[in-house]
Image (tube, rainbow over all chains, first blue to last red; front, side, top):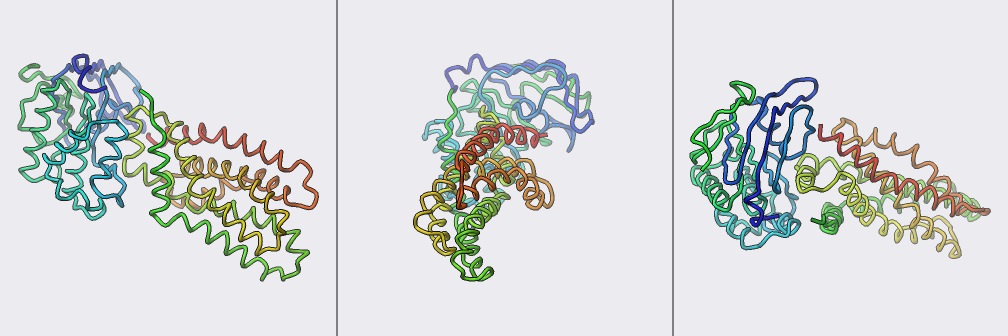
Length: 210
Length: 216
């Protein structure tokens, strides 16, 4: 895992489709994502953005089409993923220790999202925005090659939105892939756009990979 | 890459402790042992005959108490998702849950049984049997508890349904466990071990399948 293999990092989707409870969410999604790509999955509420991310993360079965993921995955969505009675830093350490990740990366992520002052505060006392930042720090402290960010801007102020973009840029420099599902256009340069509203995941190139 | 189990087990035990859930089964267990002699009268002979069975019923019901917090909170706060994303199998998660659940209620229950046994007129000579029986039987109760929690997570009235599901499967454990304390135990202890082994081995797979079904 980690940066060493990042050149091999890639995601291949070929005619991918998803059905849940007998309802077709999307179909015909084909996209080749390679190292250093940033992908924006856009669409209205309920268009299947989160579902697509969960499918890439192998949390949902694949009913039609093909999906090949090379590289470790880090996922953040609206779920808390922390034990609420633990202090913030210990809660974050649970995951970095489990992944055997370096502490310096956690320190950087905590500084980036301005969490150092909160490190001894139990999660249950944190505000919604602070919890969101903790969740983002968890993902950006991870050495996973593929980051799946589901609505990372929700509940964040301008400074922290910039911090997300900055962290995505750093991840890109180390050769990682970022897929961001958001109804807001990210301010950072996007390599691919997947518009789930327009053509059930027909691909649109915008700029091309760097 | 190997998937470490120890941090997950440690977390289960820590959450049981910090939530105050560690004491609940024990207090429940001892309360029954206190109440029982008042209900049937202090006759030592009757207590000696029936006490073992009551101890086992109390152990079974005590293992049901933490059921609601075993799976549902982890499903809702995304812990299960995060482990799957990291490549843990559902069965491995279930094994960690079962071992953690056992550590959180098994040993405390065995210690509590020493007090409870004295309260319901079980002689010193049977302490060894009680400890041995509970040590053999509680892993199966832990496995059943996790399986039933996974099956009922997210249903309304989960604990009531869970109780209904668990009780029939737990009956063999109860029969042989209580029989091992009867005046003529026969090979009840061996049968208890066999029943417990079967349930304990099957439960990670059953719980794993239930966890997989929870995702969709």
